[in-house]
Image 1 (cartoon, each protein chain N blue to C red):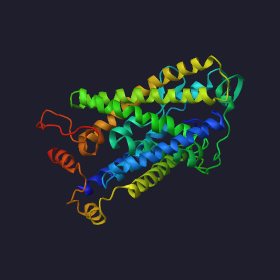
Image 2 (cartoon, rainbow over the protein chains, first blue to last red):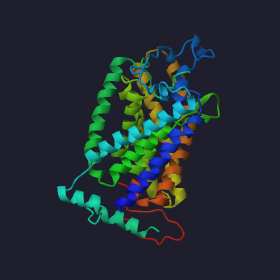
Image 3 (cartoon, rainbow over the protein chains, first blue to last red):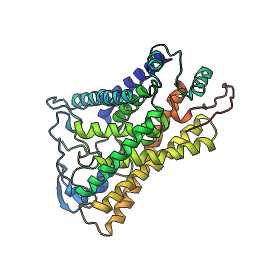
Image 4 (cartoon, rainbow over the protein chains, first blue to last red):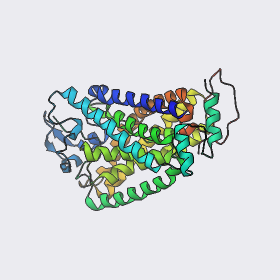
Length: 142
Length: 240
């Protein structure tokens, strides 16, 4: 069971890598809902610089980490735009999975020291109180 | 190349209001850690990591909104709450926003509390009761699950957008006067459409997971979706 869950997570991770690494290059480049609402009232030139009018977006200031090597979803030093976006997406997915997954793993509930370990390797003991429901669901599935 | 800003940028909301929301977000995240630990077992922990990574990936996929030169992207609150529950789900979206702000220069670091409040806290808090309610009311079928995802997504995205409007009312750096109503209208209109897109993505994802591994869908715990060849079993408990 634990092994099958790990397979599922691995499969899901591959899908996420594909989306962030490849599909991201086909994303719309238009400003998103928030950004476009804040730009209402201003006039922009071809370089996306405000040339007239007044709008909330005028007050926007530089990001603290605008110099980050991955700022704006690109990899600094990689000139090919597709490669740059795709690589930043791959790094982002792996980083988010590592940070998030690591944090959640550290926070996970260990009912008592020994059980947690054996459940992780063998999955023969189910320490969760609601475990009956969960495994009934899993068993009924084909 | 223009900068890609998907979340609140620095300078949009003033410092004091940003600081208040940072404190609020921190308090809520602490509560989520405490409550989320009840849910986090050996199986949910890697799943929650995957949900965070998946939301990061899909947030990169801005989809066009047909009204004009505007795009939208997933926020993820409804998706996270359906897959891993409200407490861990809030933490998932927060992790994404923190990585985006600290590594990808998206959403000001000083604005992190505001962005976490809107997308992680409001987005999830609004979606969860709706999901729990709709899963009780609607038939336990694929369409029932999909409809739940769509409705929860639309409402949660709208609520997150209105969260921003309230923040702007409290501490917006441009005095809009009565123009605030206009901003609220624009935000609501565009986010209604974004919510539909979010709903389609959430429904597709949740239904796919429910078909492959129904036991990994938090919102379905104790029940499963009915397909013609599945024998009926009495539902125990339901969404918590």
